[in-house]
Length: 84
Image (cartoon, rainbow, N blue to C red; front, side):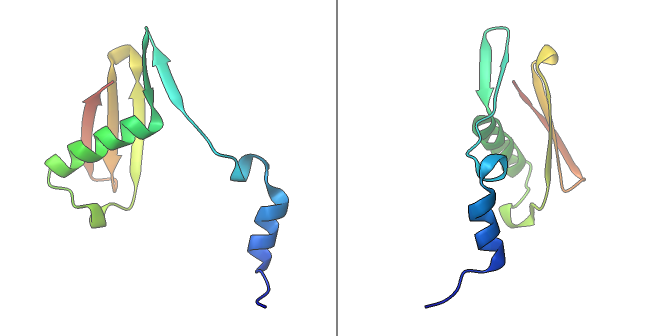
């Protein structure tokens, strides 16, 4: 029987915030968007701009609900925005 690596054992022992399921929802003036929804909209917009899935290494997201806009930068190069 194979032994579990020390990383796997540490993760089982640690638990808590690091391993907890997370759900992020942004609410503003009666509207709300989940993290998953925003990331899917960003992905669609990026694909429409010609970004290929296999090229994406990093996605930075900036939510500005007061402007009803979500800005994003892919791989520190491709910039875009979607409506909140």
